[in-house]
Image 1: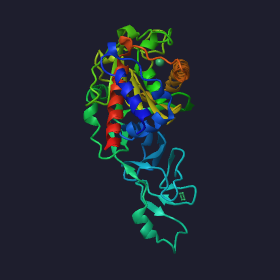
Image 2 (image 1 turned 60 degrees about the vertical axis):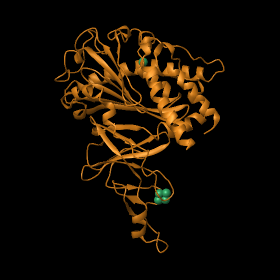
Image 3 (image 1 turned 90 degrees about the horizontal axis):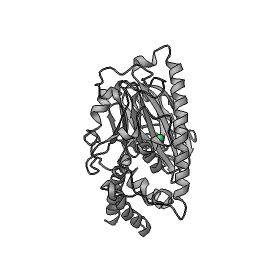
Image 4 (image 1 turned 135 degrees about the vertical axis):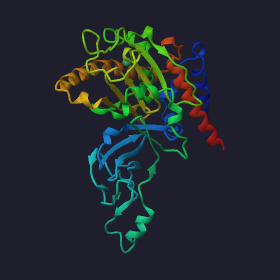
Length: 393
Ligand code: FES
Ligand SMILES: [Fe+2]
């Protein structure tokens, strides 16, 4: 490890811990290509990575390609219904075998037509004999397969060695997801925003903190004001879920309607408290969600470089909601609201990333309304330090 990366990691220590003494991350931890290369192993190579909801690969044969920090992966559901996460890089010469979501019986590499089953097993490799027998190739060349953990309806994978299970580290989040019955939800809409010009940590911070919602979202977020936000404890040594509650000013609240009420039917079985707040939660590095009394929005945040990421958005609803005759109209309204709010956040992220690249970039103190940020930094620091220790061995 270079001394520059090690020095930056030591500077990150000042960004974690007690809120009054913590300051924001060192600017070069966002802007340095070398630090991003370090994070590809330290963070993305050694954490559970959220990939999709089970309803995005609902049927046997469904395949969903997702690239996380330069690693092209594909989520598949095989004919027996089992979900796999595979490397999508062909074992012949590393061509990605699939570029777009599809329903298929096999994954055929576009380059020389090697083909694989949805469990990653090689099925065919044309014109390789007599140099190589197909049976030998089949025994040797399969798409690498990664562990799958399905938690509350969400598919996670891990690219590192022998990961500990994810679920015990999300116990603080589990009751909220269970109450919203996220494993039964279905997709009501989504979009993919490519080439977003900022660092992945800018995106996660913007999503996690409540402070900015009173200012850049002025006029749009008053139903769930930042001054009422409740923060929770977080232990970076044992937990992977960071959460805050944003109470609505009224029960069954929402952002879309004039009267401040939820636009879609409220989810069955929520408590009075759960009907009166938004739950904002992250499972870093790739998942951020907002759970409302009537629906859920999920971000998949996948960096493509130190200064670029892909932002995928999925809206999930109880199955009955998407069957409503007025669903499309309400979804269009939701999409319009998202475009405004996300436009404000995107401008902030881009401007902040540009600022962090300047010589006079700042490391400032946190508001109590940003309590989730030193928590996130503690989570990062733990991974950075573990990677440095591993590199030293
Ligand atoms: S790279 Fe895939 S078949 Fe050659
Ligand atoms: Fe925001």
